[in-house]
Image (cartoon, rainbow, N blue to C red; front, side, top):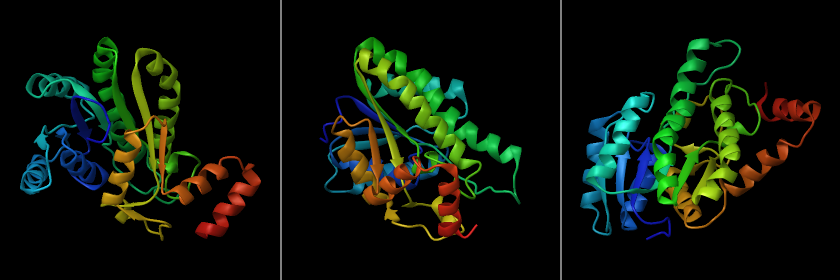
Length: 258
């Protein structure tokens, strides 16, 4: 076990990328993982892969779900706990990315990303937090991004959703502490996934999804609020938050060529 607490681990966005790699990691560590995503086929393949791994002591159980449907998320929480037992760890990872800047600015794109990336998390929190508070414990990890630290070119739709998640977690943290709920904020840098493959620029310090999953699992074994990686890239962007606008925009132009 990784020290992430007792009970079922529920991962949203588990069909690919970080969520998929983390589901496999937690299953190897002996967890029962409830895996959610829209693609039932991809979840079935994930469960089969976990079952075929000789070193896996846990299991992965698919629960297909569209996180933009609040009623479906609440129902999924009920079904998971009825079938598998109480959720002790939730990793709210479902998300999507569409590059957007001046030339392709679209309210529809911005709204679509907010529905998945932000409200998908809000719907899960709405279903989970009362349960965890009533039980007096549990862990919730929200996957945001270092892209939420400051505005970045081509991230005019994606970045605001992640900034909103960072603010949301900061707002909830003190009350979660009082309720005995351990809240984690996960801020990855560039991770090699189908979503980052859409980026039209070189990505510094990019890491494989399996390496990201290991960093998350190790971080969840501790008590740190923020789990940010890769360390050098995360520190650089965190420091960039302290720059005045004049210096920040000059840095962005130099680094990205925009």
